[in-house]
Length: 268
Image (cartoon, rainbow, N blue to C red; front, side, top):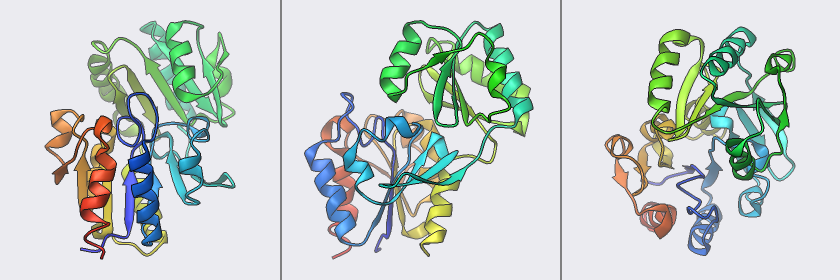
């Protein structure tokens, strides 16, 4: 099979635990691009957390941000697609987060806001490369449009919160655990899979011609959409079971392993 598109997650996949792109991963991505493969990074991060990686911005391809709520074309940073949460749903998520006394981080118009200044916010700022403005009343953002809401709390609490919020919100919001400590809320039409499929269609690429690689539960739909869905060796078992192939871990160049096995060899 000649694959024409590679969709790859960032954290836990393309990036090591130290948040770097290894030389082997970068070399493999460049070789895939040289062979004409469309390499699309698909991440839950906002633009601020991607802009610091020239290895990604120099690909001159669309990048999926905020779990699919935005698509940006680099290197010019042109916004190709954006979908905000419904304001009534966003208001409900904010109220429920405050009721649970969780740390709430919100992305609105490319800027980061938080409901409190604490260690969680400092860690999230470092992770996302955004400087948070602290708001005592986060509902003031409703009129500006909210791209995503993040609840940051103890990992043991997140599964319960997710179950409660899915029951409360129904099909009015996409509620996704993007990391053990993160519960994120998006418009219900937003997902990495939807964004990957839209980009592929715009380039005349079929789903069967896509390879998707990820490590998280928010990557599962993207993995299942692709002709070849690969899970990282460091992914939870629930993600691995949904994949066609399990590669090496992010500490052992798992992305490069997939590219070398299924693109650089198969496309010759």
